[in-house]
Amino acid sequence: MKNRRQSTLILLMFAGTALCALALAGELLSGQAMEVDFARKNLAPCLAHPFGTDWMGRELLARTLAGLSLSVRVGALAAAVSAAIALMLGAACAVFGGWVDGIVSCIMDLVMGIPHILLILLISLACGKGMMGVTVGVALTHWTAMARLLRGEVLQLRQAPWFQAARRVPEKAAVYTSGSPSAPSTAGRNAPPISARHSSRGQRHLFGVRSLSGTARHWHYFGGEYGGAYHRPVVAGPLSWNFAGAGGNAVSLGWGTAAPAAVAGQCAGIGGRAMKPILSVENLSITFTRYGRGRERKELSAIRSLSLTVDPGQVAAVVGSSGAGKSLLAHAIFHLLPQNAQVRGSILYDGYPLTLERAKAFRGKEIALVPQGVTWLDPMMRVGPQICRGKRDTASKELCRETLARYGLGPEVEELYPFQLSGGMARRVLIAAAVMDTPRLVVADEPTPGLDARAAARILGHFRELAQEGTGVLFITHDLELALTVADKVVVMYEGQTVDETGAASFRTGEGLTHPYSRALWRAMPGNEFQP
Image 1: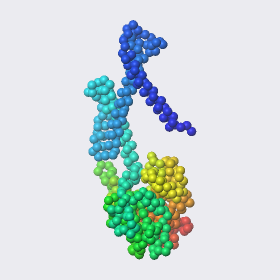
Image 2: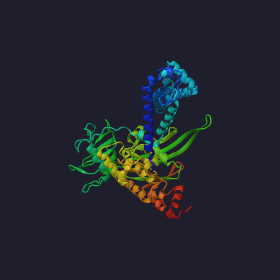
Image 3: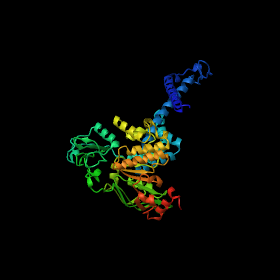
């Protein structure tokens, strides 16, 4: 296949070289172009004078090259200035919006509304005519079309799912650890920064969590022995903490310069304490405002009084027909709804309201989203850096390879762009990126479409492993039969409401289903002979 990129690059280099040579030749011949010799006036083209001479005996070839050289220089300078103006104003419109966009748009409309040639002449005369006047005139009248194009492109990129997801990941915070496994719970605030080697080792071992034999408690969150105490560095993005001590006490935590109050939140349910839900949605309602003709305004209710809970170590499947509001629920948890959405009710994460500020702090680290569409991947970045989130150290790359291998993808996938992946591969990359740091809550929005039965079973098996390690999993799907292979409980949604929240066993036997829609789903399963 012909390499068009290489051919285009060669053509551009040739054109650039020709223009530079033309500009240089015209500059060198500018003196000869002005020489007057009436003895050779009006000569016809010949070998000595390829273009002939004019009525003053001036060399027409030299004058042509000098004129072309001047045109090239004016065009290049005017294009550079015009492009700079278009880039600054077009990007400012898209980035700042509001009054900035309004003012710049008015200026563009004004410039484009004046006859083009007339505006160039007026600006050139005002700037002193000559080369400088023409350059300024062309530069100040040719930026509008490019600015509109750049504004549209930037606005389109800002609305892309991968950009929305990337901008919501906060900057990396400081990471601290205590020097002693038996240090008090506040030691992490003033402890020295954790070493990169220590962090990477902790991240690698997150996929090798095991229970320790010979202990009073079986640890599913942490592992490894340290001086007779159980010490496990848990690293998830900028949030890092250590749990140590034979009694299972949380000993240190670091988050920027201040530690959250709930230091032992990850230990909920260990050692006989009551386990609180990792996610609790209560009376959630979502409406969208739509405008028609004139001042007509409509309120579209998408979700009404929805309630559900997800416990640590539990896989909760959310099933329902298309349009029931399942994906809206996932986006509401992560505060990814559009601006015309009104949200009522409460969403609690680890017992506290999941506000926009908390969601920004936890997204991509403690809570992870496996989006429904593969367009959430950055099309301009290779797979490896997307999963590693820009980290280039050896430990991060090794962890990336291990995570990809876990989902049946080879190391060569790291060097591919999203458009080079099949639909199933791209979906597995999204899942790998979401669970790489072992979050405490995973919201998987239709993660299995486009996958064969073996790949889907492998992914659900990994969700089950995450749940056994203490992660809460909210599994959104249309495939009830597939969900029952891994779910602990099933939440049935119908027309934006929760109509049933029951154990998975109820859908295996048909007992305990209270709503007609839930019973209809059970009867329609293949094992029940698709009863109407």
